[in-house]
Length: 201
Image (cartoon, rainbow, N blue to C red; front, side, top):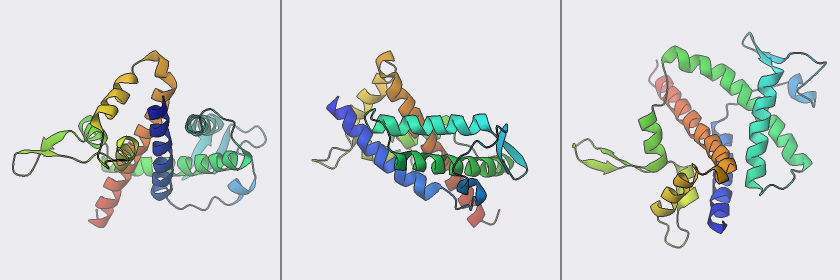
């Protein structure tokens, strides 16, 4: 359990950094100034690029983010500052998702199962020479499973962790992992989009 808690703490810290770097800068204006996402019982809380954002979508994102924070805090109650941060991050995620998903769809940007597996496990892939080449896992994965004493990735601990996720006793941890996995995918999608923009496409 001590090892699992260490993994949680490492992942929580790095995911927070990745989220901050990946988020696009948007001015939310009066939406953020209202202090509450649900106003007047409306079925939508905002309109972004002509698309209404349902209250249910906001609440679903907020719940997912809150659960992630709670799991990383060991199930402790969240303070007012953390709750405020969750609300802000929820809005930012909705804005980013609504705008970027359309661009991803138009450009055919997606992350395959094989790509995700390589980013997560760093499994061997064929290099340019046709020989197997070990790929580095995503920084979040390295942060979660690096042995602090040796500085090396502990693949045994990593393997045990993912195998344990199929155990019903680790249902909450699996939910937390799926959140992290989505962050990794979203970051990769954004990276692909930016690469296309740099190429002038």
